[in-house]
Image (cartoon, rainbow, N blue to C red; front, side, top):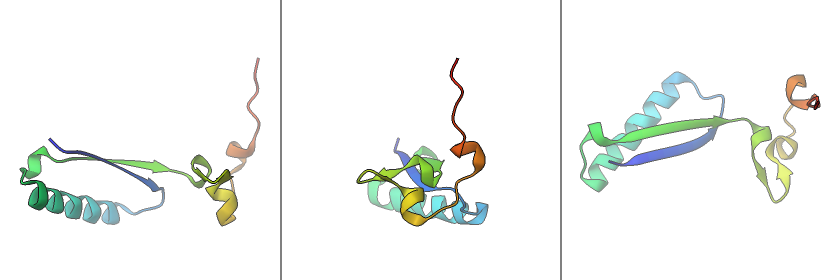
Length: 77
């Protein structure tokens, strides 16, 4: 049973996700010779402030505006 996990930035439409998982399933079935029912795909959405490359957050590299809730410091008791 192939289990495929894909990490991607949030913002894709439901139609894009449907098309993507259909294509990935078709390719997996063709290449690995498995039944479509055995292919499980997990889409993990993340925000640009959840990923860093070379010590720099993706949101900083892209100049993405960060929501206040993310920028606010966490109160520790």
